[in-house]
Length: 104
Image (cartoon, rainbow, N blue to C red; front, side):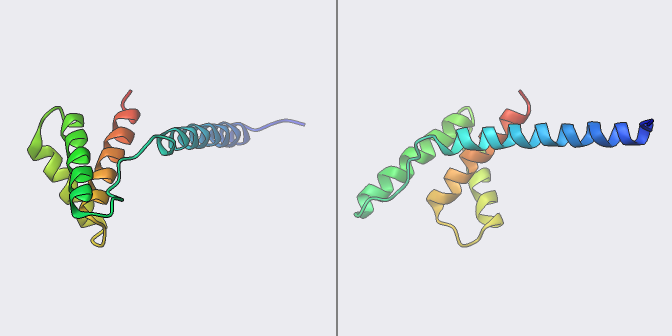
């Protein structure tokens, strides 16, 4: 019984895809396990404080570039128009983390 080169390629591609999927699942599992700062407070002051903390973290992740942070927030709001400002900031933080993980 001989194995053709096409079959070998298919097996290698399948194995590679499986490994990539596992690695992505592991990264996703790690990122969802982290504590989130969400504006779950009952008062407007609590929500504002949580938004400020999220904004500070995003700005820090953008190396102090406030304009970049604002662009990322607007991008997330454009992708999902119904989300809150806090959700947009959280998604921008997550997207930065994922994107930077791909380049390491």
